[in-house]
Length: 235
Image: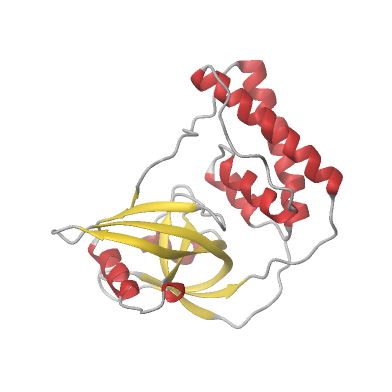
């Protein structure tokens, strides 16, 4: 089990999704449920953009928060900063968010009576990004494996290589880029997100890249997920 530095617990609006957000990732969302429309309205009322922060946390397969409570949610989530919002006449929103910082979920508050009456709030510990020893050989290996993986998926899907920017040299940035970009089930992306530091994340990513590249090569099949941009993700 990963060990994280303790921090002072904070209260955070929560937005459960069947996805894991990664720090630095841009995520558009379509907001239509009344309780989450209220959440967006409250966030937009805050004068500073940096204060418009809420938590995105992945739901475990087959679970419902309303019936299972905190056990329906993964332990580690990522905050999202609300960067822009378009409101429609019927009260729906299309919003753009950016993943900001990881947190560990300690508790949630379910509203009494109708659990869908208002949005969830969580008690969370924000997680530092701990410094770790640089691993230049590991960075070079993961960069090479990631380029091979992307090229192979591009050939399988489109008959050509997927054009993508060069992998960053920074160890932490590379670890999160691979975490965000690989086509993985939620549980496996969540495992990468929860890694204690960038070196551990890259070691895990290396194993997954070798496995996924081998499967696509041997079986000439694609992961059962779309690597293209998902567009607006509905709540």
